Length: 173
Length: 200
Image 1 (tube, rainbow over the protein chains, first blue to last red):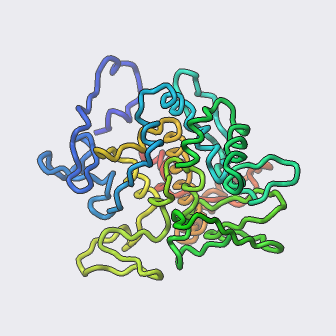
Image 2 (cartoon, rainbow over the protein chains, first blue to last red; image 1 turned 120 degrees about the vertical axis):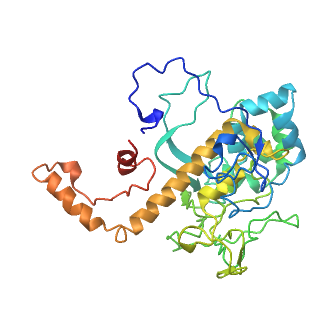
Image 3 (cartoon, helix red, strand yellow; image 1 turned 180 degrees about the horizontal axis):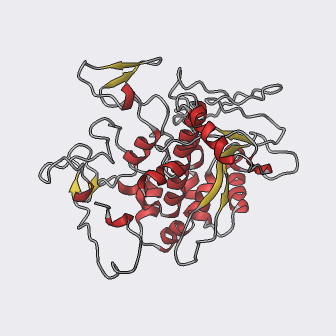
């Protein structure tokens, strides 16, 4: 039988709702949450096995360390600066990163209301020299060497719209 | 800055002293090996970093990898194997390995494991837009890695057989942009033409 998803779309399925239930099934080995339907087809509902998270026992990695303090608060907090941080998290990350990303961003499907990160062709990370070129501002890894105030100003200068106190706390994290 | 990860896995860990030391290799070092980052001093050029390098993600996603640990590298053993610095050692006879007896955790397995929702460990999933960028980046790396494998293993895929077929199909249909070396993507490559043909 041809699966439903492989049929040509003729509109007759419109209105039919497909539901997977809640994502509450815990993987017995690694603790990841899953939908019950994600289990390996041969495993039972009572003792579900999953490949997605730990490849049926083959992948076991150390748990993620909890994030350092100002970062955890910024990720979960309800304060204005925490919300602002989450809105501009990519700029904060780029300001602190050692390398830059080169990619052709595809903005054809991006909308202001619905955030999309889509790229085409190739993607690469580049790392510059440790010393800035004469007459150029310090960037990326170059900002890790030198005076803390100059680092902060350099990071604030390279990206607009960032909060100086938030950046200060991340820098000293 | 040359890093041989096989001998020193702790190379990029958090420093225990409050000093930074850098080794600069100047002059004629031009080549980038898959496992080395070469930083050229003062000439201002940017150097690409191989996605296979263990420092690839922590160098950019400093917020997601605040201590530089928990990163993918090519010698993470599967459960039941040990990495002794030069080879994988099986813990006992009954250990199940990966496909074709592989003993290492693949990039896809690593990122899939890392991105699961686990109670009290889901902070990485809160990173919003940064997380999206990270996932796209991680998948692009995985795909690039696979394409590299296919590129290097065309002989094993018996591509010369396909090439004859392609030649017959293209006979008399020569355009400027058709000329070049053909790469055959097997049907096991997700998203490729053959995989789509097989599924639908």
